[in-house]
Image (cartoon, rainbow, N blue to C red; front, side, top):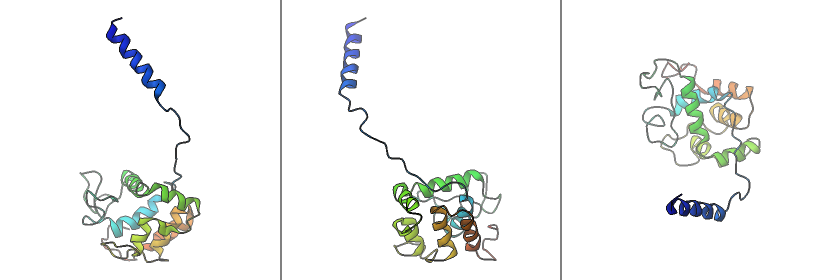
Length: 173
């Protein structure tokens, strides 16, 4: 062994001995289930996923789906139905906004959901270029809240009712 190799090994051992090591539990968030999110993504993409809103690149909440921005460059708006990959990307985008806050709302059974920027902006309680998207207590609002609070079947009902009977663009339902 050369002197350089011995010195490198000593430096590595000193650095390791001086490292603080484990300092406590890591924070892990409990997020709403991906199961049932396909019902939630439909009204989100319908109302918020246009190419000039949250379908635009560079947004912190980026939504993909049939009526707007597509994840696969070969898909076109209103072409193929929203793919599972797009639903998964939408889920990651939504839960990635404020994971700690979303986890707290979930732990509280959905109480005080206005802690989430997503809810405040959708309700119009905070400045939002898109204005009020889901008025408090509307089917769209309940769709989000039920999903966050893990309300299962009720989420699907509220989300299905969130889109008008004759939606535009017609490719949504």
